[in-house]
Amino acid sequence: MEKLLESGEAVDARDRHLDYMLQIAENRDSRMFGTETQEWFNQMEMEHDNLRAAFEWAGSNHPDKALKLAYALGGFWTVRDHISESRLWCQAILEKTKTISNVDVHRARVYVVLGWMSVTSGEHKAARLAAEQAIPLGRQTKDLTTVTRAYGILALASAFLGDFPTAQQAVTEGESLARARGLRSELAFLLSIRGQMQYFSRGDVARAKAYLDEASRIAREEGFRWASSFLAIGMAHTAAFLGDIEAARAAFRESGEIAARMGNRRIQYSSQSELAHVLRQHGELEEPLGIYKDLLPKWKDLGHRAAVAHELECIAYILLRKEEPERAAILLSAAQEIRRVIDTPRTNYEEDEYEREVAALREMLGEAFDKKWDEGKFLSMEQAIQVASPPSSSPTSKAIHPDNRNHQKH
Image (tube, rainbow, N blue to C red; front, side, top):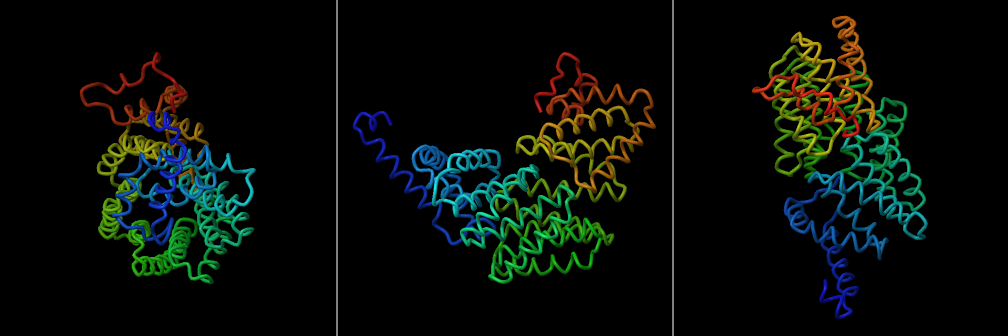
């Protein structure tokens, strides 16, 4: 760079570097919810520092190309878990281009990327907002593929937020567009959402299975591996609802194995966590407790604070069954503080369980409840994880020290 600056060739060299990286990123048939190959993912991983350099230059000098690069990398960012970084890039370039003309089609696509990155990191309000920005821009530019994808994200985020009327309308609109335009990957995605909504919001296992079966068939025919891993989770829940725990375990394992081959840690962790939820709901304690404890630092490293909060809650529910109510109260309070900081509520289903468990804890602890709740409120995320899974060589109480409390660290 120093030599290029001395010779006056730096601008031209960086422009050509940007064009080259954009060409590599766009050198495939589809983007997001598509059929990217393992070879392409590996190539993007090797080129990641080059891509960062190109994106930084584009953001300052060629914002239109930065939008194209962000969209082209959406699938890579998703599969290889570069969620936090990608959200920052997308937010920055969307802010920079909001007054630029003739880029609305690209802005709509980047809003979809941002929405998907947000929903996969548990930031459901941000995901819904991004999808709501993408839909009118996509319609205005007649990019109905982007509109279809945005409806899927809007449906998923709204369902997580407990707004089932919005979720139902969005998934219906999206499915209609996907079928009308022959968007097979998008249709598989929307059907998988619809199946999970039927299961979780209505308990309609038969309808859920029908949607998931169709989505699974499409995913297999299209070679859509990401959907296959997501769908296996849905199939596992259906099996668990019918009481076939071993079939559920096998489906969760299949989902994790597909994700591992793709290099996606988020779905691997989700598969394990969902298995733990099923086991806990069927009365198991030790195996799900071990899974939750193992996943806590992994979710933290991935930057998924909503998942950390939920695992802490689930550990607390098990501790209550194991007659450790004081530690349970501390963990539930710490989880609530994490959720407050990131503004991510529990789903309706999770909220029902949470309220029951908190009520049970209040009754069990009596006047001591408020004291333990205050202890948890001021823990950092790292301290809460230590309380949830204390080192065997030291007592749990050492993890909580008044001098170390700092709720800002969440």
